[in-house]
Structures are given as C-alpha cells and as structure tokens.
Length: 555
Image 1 (cartoon, rainbow, N blue to C red):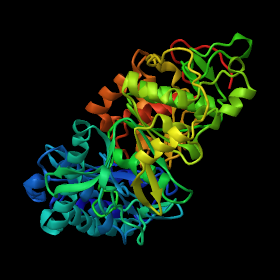
Image 2: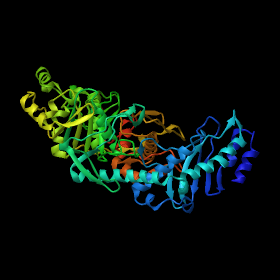
Image 3: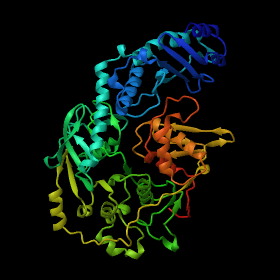
C-alpha cells in the first residue's frame, strides 16, 4: 500500500498514461488489491480493480456459505454493502443490481477468499494525473469500503441472514411448484405494483395481494415456515378484468418471478417456474428458419412457412416465431398479454370467419392451438385477456382482477361460455408438432467491427451492440438487469468462435452451467447470469445469424 501511494505521488502532474505504473498487485492490510486494467484516458471506461479478502479476515458466518442459494445471496449482499459504503465516493463503483438477486460476477467466493470486482475512475485535471487525489481514494478510502463490505465484524449480521434466508426461501418455494401442479405462486401480502416504469421498487401505498379462497394453498419455506398464497395451476389460466385493475401488473410480477428478489421488495413472495417465457408481437424483427406452419400456413404464391425467414416480420409472424422459439429454448410455460399481442394471431371471430374464407386466411390463431399445446405437449399458458371471451372455452382457471384484488371466476366463466356460444369454428388444419431444434452457424454471429477489432457492449436492458449490429431487446421483457445483456453478448461471442452448433440451447445451457462468469480472459465484474431463453432470444434477433434450413420468406 505504501509503495502504491508513493507511486501515485511520484506520477502526480504527469500525463494520464503514467497511471499504467500502478497496474499489478498491491498488498494492503487485510486484503490484496489487484489493478487489472487502467483506463487509457479520463474519458475512457473506468479502471478495473479487484480486492481479495482472505477467508480468515472476512470471517463470514457459516450460515451464509451453506448451499448455493445462500452463497449467491451472501455475494449479492456484499456487493450491495460495498455500494452503500462507496456512496459518497463517486469514483468507485460496483455492479450491485437493483431488486433482483442474480448470480453476478461482481463478488466471487474463491479458494483465496472473498473477491470484489469494481471500477475506479482515476482522477485527472484534463489529461494530467491527480496522483495525490488518487492516493486518497485508493489508499485511504478504499480500505474502509472493502472492510465495510467483506469483513463480517463490520456487516449487519441480522440483515445478512435475512437476505440469505429470503433467497433460500424463494428457491424452496419455486422448487415445490411442479410437484404441486403449479406454474406460479403469489404469497399473501405480496406487493405487486412498482413505483413507475423506470423505478422497480415497490409502490408504497399499493394494495397487498390477497388470494381467493378457492386458489389459496400453503407452501413451506425453510426459514419463514408455512407461507399461504395463491397457486396458479398448470394448464390454461386467463387473467381478466377491466382496464387499469391490475391484470398486466400481476402478469409482470409472474414473468419476473423466475428470479429471486431482495427481502422487502414485495415480490419476494412471487415465484414462477424457471422456464416461464413471455412472448409478444414485435414488428420489424428478424426471423430465421422457424417453422411457423402450425400458426401461419402457406402464403400467397406458394411461399412455404416450414422454415420461414424474414428481416422484417409482421406482428402475427413475429409472435408466432416468438412462441416457437420459446419452446425450442426449453420453455413449457408461456406468458401472453393481449396488450402486446397481434390481434390476428390471437383470435379470428365468427363474423370475420364468415367474411373471409378459411382458404384465404393463412393464420391459425392461438385460440385454436392453446388447448392442443396443453393437451398434446403439456405447455401451460397464462394469458391476460380483456377484450375477447373466445378463450373462455379452453380455460382451466379464470382469475378476475378488480381494483388489484383477484377473484376466482372460473365457474362463472364456464357458465358464460355455455350461455353465450361464440358460434366460431376451430380452424386447425393439422396436428400441432413440436418445433425442431435449428442448428446455427457460429461464424455468422459476427462480433468484429473490423479485422482484429471486436465489439460487445450492452446499452441498458434494451440494446446489445455486437460487432456492427445493434440488437433490439426491448421485446425480451424478462431481462432484469443490464449486466445480463453484457453476459448475453459475451456468450454469443463465444458462440461465434464455435463453428456449427447443432443444438444451440443445449450448448448454451452447458456453458451457463459451467463457466459463464469466465467469458473474458481478464476478470470482469459487470456480468449477471442470464437464462438460456434470453440468450436464444438475442441470437434469434441477430440479423446476420444463419440457422440450418434457412429458407426465404416475407414479413
């Protein structure tokens, strides 16, 4: 530490590139500081550093290290503690996340100890080094921040235990869903509404969730004990009700229930099966060799849809592709909101059937396939529907939201369906086959902007910059954190070096289960583990990618 301080004082006032002199390892009291990458100038991305605190110094309680859920929660808690301790020092930053508890690379538990990965914007006046100011940050302030985050005697032990217990409980609840015949669970008292579209914290004056008696059941959590709430059964579930009564809010909570949440978030009592996938329409996206024929038959002039490709998909085409891609990626639970769906993909009512003959309409709407998805392939669907009652004929469960309060109206829905027959007839022409897995040519996933120069960069949760292409991820609504976008980009970069991959979902799942956080040769603290479903969603939207069996199509 003294040597580092002397070096910083020596280079004070010199040109910015002299900061390279501090790169390397430095022994500090209580930890080792590793300066892995020094920024090239004051306007470049901040410098990357690590602090490795030996286990005997960290002294973390055994309860925080027992089992994968608790270890992940403890690492998450340490990152948040680092962020709080560094709040007054704008130059020091760590990727600590927001409301979800993800598997991040910002804090690792290694054989050497607790490893914290963070960035420091090294100070300068113009392009002149402020070495004494840097020494203040690295040699005086940073040791206090590291100790506050990674030494148990300075952590709030009770708060750490609550954090670990909450994540362990959510994992336990999620593990019980399948055996209970459920696809989701919402605990009594859960707070579903968020403060705003850009603030994911719970709404302070929201109405707590209260389960209908008929859907109430009790699951067991290892720390909280029995937890009562609403079970969402497997099968076809409709969420109905008037506008602004909480239908989409419930679905949004369920779609993010694939992740664990921090204690007190309000959604820390909401869990969904891990493979739940939100699908929607997305005008203008690319589609690659997807078999759309179960939903979109032969197009005018004899164009086939069995291996359909386009650079400019329509609403119905994009939603059909999203459904098939979700199943290919491993999902068995689909989440659909009519507000973000293509009307002609969802329904064709009796009057339109009478006006436009079946032979003139290539689209088989989801309403005619949804029961077959359930009965033939055991695929569950949760559908927010406020404008069409045609889905009532197939629904197993109907939940009505009224002023953010759910009611089980399944019996009433069946009575209405029987009394008010729609008169429409199903338009299915052939049995529903499971989508085949498409191979991908890894070399077509291009990350270079020019020979020898690669670009993999995330912009928030919505955009992935990969080579010369900007991949629009706004419709991939289950990406919870920008750090997942960067990890997706690095996974696709790895794919680009892998030649032809016959089964991309299996290949990605294997990589995610082994070394996802080691995607760069140098340590990187800005990654969060995505699901295979989201990585495949990004790959499917990459315009330059080429899949096996590519055939020309139109949007």
